[in-house]
Amino acid sequence: GILSTREILKKAQNEGYAVPAFNIHNLETLQAVVETAGELKSPVILAGTPSTLVYAGGDYIVSMAEVASKKYDIPIAIHLDHYEDVSEIKNYIDLGFKSAMIDASHLSYEDNIETVKEVVEYAHRFDATVEAELGRLCGQEDDLIVDEKDTVYTNPKQAKDFVDRTGIDSLAISIGTSHGLYKGEAKLDFDRLVEIKKSVDVPLVLHGASDIPDELVKKSISLGICKVNIATDLKIPFSDSLKEYFIENPQANDPRKYMAPAKNSMKKIVAHKIYVCGSNNRY
Ligand code: 13P
Ligand code: ZN
Ligand code: NA
Image 1 (cartoon, rainbow, N blue to C red):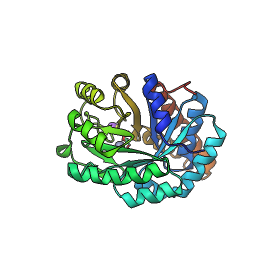
Image 2: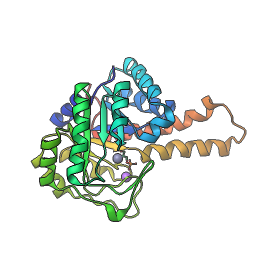
Image 3: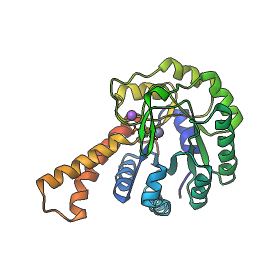
């Protein structure tokens, strides 16, 4: 069945790898992720943003993930990604989601804590896990757009207070990654990551992992990152393959034909990211 992220992130933390969280949008992208994770025996988190769940239907996502969890002998979690609305999170937990990110990082510190606490209290009654963000990434994640000047790095001392007072299960941190593609070169503040890791026990989450050199992602995992969020790096090969297919076959109209290369090129990147996370052959 569908799992929370509690056990899979604890195991990753204990063994020093990261669980990839892939943003999916429909049947084909979900299949590309779970087929690859199944082949590589990797735990996997299927993430959906608010607009994705409106687009695809949260109930469809739950059902497809349930099918996948029977088909493949790996742990599968479905995760609410970047939710700002507490009541929406509660509704999706009622529908079967067991993992949620409450993104209240745009609020004041005290309001962030109050909002997160309300989600934690509700989620834990249903054995669902909660991720929250301290600090703020810039860039674009679906409809969420944050300007570069509004970036805030995570304060390590505040992180401990935040985790203690909210009771969250995992912490999303801001150390220099951004959502989507980079304008310049990615620079990660590893010293800050080390300090955060020293001050909190919960698994740490790296958002915005697309368009970051593999070596930097691997280094952040070696320093304590247990969940790596990937969206853009999967969207690009999928849509590029579709474009190529229609350029070569302008008369094409059979989804079974034109979706196949898109899925395959996405699967290759999913596999690559699983190796970067070191999550293969863990189950
Ligand atoms: P990227 O699009 O940069 O991979 O960011 C994904 C993300 O953080 C999802 O929450
Ligand atoms: Zn994110
Ligand atoms: Na990114």
